[in-house]
Length: 80
Image (cartoon, rainbow, N blue to C red; front, side, top):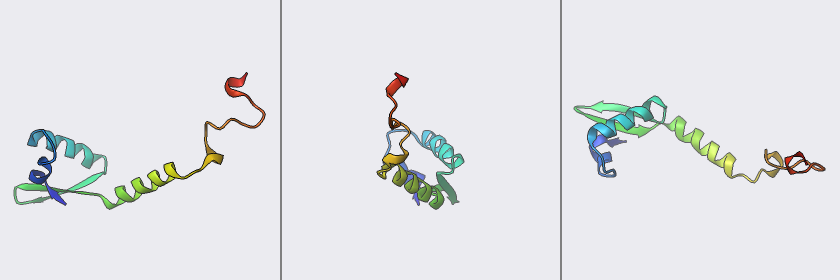
């Protein structure tokens, strides 16, 4: 979890811009927000991280047999 003021140190934009982007990420289910005093603290949603890692793993697995671009045996590219 990071406070908005800490996140701003990593970016070259204003606090209102950060708030806008974080609201988009929150609505997308990527981050969750908690308010502590006047500050908002953001953290990655565990469910998002798990789903993201599973998706990346599927993309990186050598799965040539299921490749949609694999040419069927006996056919030619472009149907020619």
